[in-house]
Length: 114
Image (cartoon, rainbow, N blue to C red; front, side, top):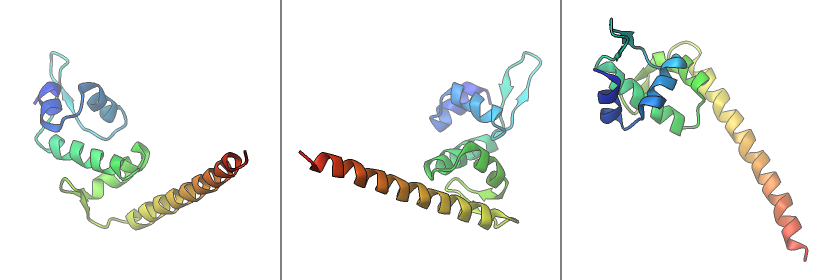
């Protein structure tokens, strides 16, 4: 399928699909005319990428866990290091949340002083 059809089927803009390709998240092949051609699996891959981005993962992390993803949700085959990668991302996210809560507290203190 061409990029326009993949875009329609996934709700993701062609520009973003090209970005996913540049980040190594989406495979494509080029025709003689230079057009990108995607296979049926690309629909699931794009949906996996969107779900993983929604979970707060970077494209770099997604690139490393995508080979273990199955289905659109996605579910995972627990490949080597996958648990450690996702656990590390969760710990980093918890740290960012803690930092934001401290910053919020400091800002709220400033606003409490008339």
